[in-house]
Length: 319
Image (tube, rainbow, N blue to C red; front, side):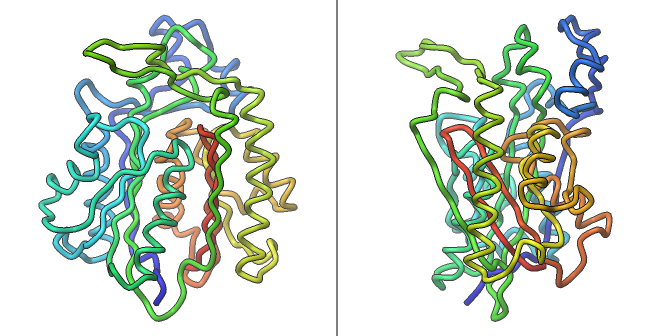
């Protein structure tokens, strides 16, 4: 038994917010400063009161429609998010309720920007085991809720959004290989080091990042895990039709492609228009490339994520 991708969907909230729009909001920045360092031109920000499950709902409906399925057909729902609606219940259970599904296994995965790759790998294992047949896997984030808008080194980088895919049991392989890793010794270079204790926020409730350390770590492990996945599947990296990495920074994408000896023409890039949407970035990019026709049936895709923890991973699949 294998799992195959049969539908994708995505959702971006509200109008696009440009770099100069941020400057007009009082942030000490400008378009040239952001775009030359990151490649980011626009991002989307959730409206007041809009939550991760709200964004996930729209993306999930579109993925279900693409797959020709109803919510009742699902027996597994996994949501990757670092910005859940509540401490509990899980965002997956809230999404399940909004979709009108009853009885499916539902839970969240927290691996920050690697979250979707982690969740997709987990869903693949469930389906391969024979215990489940149809999975909804979602990456949904409202990072605007955890940004310090006075810190221009971080607040200009992130955006909100959601992406979703449907996996279904199949006799023919779809997901060919997966690899997941983590090293908690590096937890301090990207974190939100706060918590709620007795009704009070303790520590720091905002995202903090050592940008240079994250860059160096990301470039190294993304190239390594790509090679690991290709080796596990018995293919050469040159056989990959499309690389869909976590959309953190154009320089990371370019450096990863260079290490893999891959042309940027084979890399799906959305960071310029979406910013860094954490666990949502890979499925957002995947859905865009599926819908605009770049990705064709029979092609091989390598999805990659790297994020706080530190976590990293990859999924190699054929569509």
